[in-house]
Length: 348
Image (cartoon, rainbow, N blue to C red; front, side, top):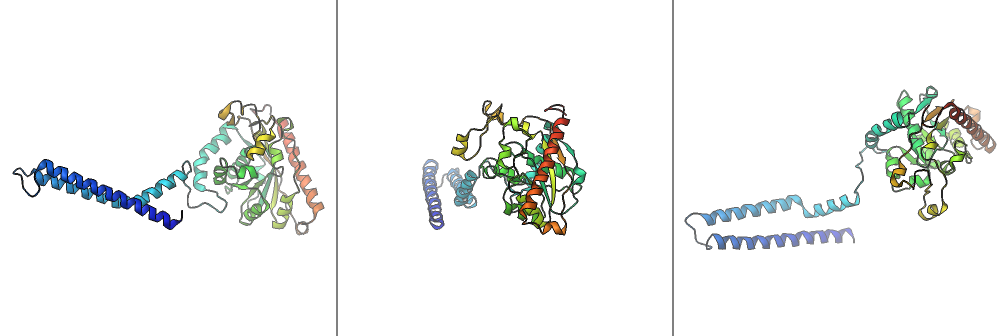
């Protein structure tokens, strides 16, 4: 239905209801006059006048409420409320990628609890974070849900002197999910693609990149902390073109949050999203989605910067591939050291 047709329908609805109300008031007037006296004749006790005055007061009050309440506005408001049921109101400061400072502020108490109490995150190497400039944090992918991206961003914000909070890149299936996407976007998540990463860096934002992609998130538990292939090294080429510093990051503990036993292909083909089988999901139902309280370690490596000669090799595939593999080896070494350093999955 067009907007003009819908507007006419709303006006017709309002006119019809007002007409019905006036007819009802006329019937009420007749009943009051019949009970309190004969029209045109006064009763000695003034009952008829009091009844008419009461009726007029009621009529004026109802008419005023109709004009103030606005049936068309009521209809529009109800329709808007139904269509946005369950959605949190956003502030006016939402950036082009959907980050909502108000939502982030409301979630900060939960994020602090997860960081300090639930996963007891220990951070090393935070003093190596640059004070400013463009930065790409390159981390291993851990788990189906991007808890790792949220916690790496939270660690940088808490440890950095200026309180910078990076934007974490999300896989396509996470970025398009109707359940997780709105919340993660408001907390700083951005769909992973070269265009988005470039726009964020040009806007002065730091980003957390996971070169393993979905293969890293869906690898079975028996292959935990064994890095998958780092794609084509697009993050290296991007860093060279925009003169962004690369920082290797290792995350240990996130792969025990939801240990992946296996993931059937049929649900992924039917729904478009992976539904891995874990020790608690789907056996425990919705309770199986609660992350396990594993001990986390986040380790930041030495920044990798570029000189003028390096930046001219942004299209050199051999240099890009070699740099990609060097960074992958650095992160793999960090993972092996941190895994051996912890005494238990659930305690340091």
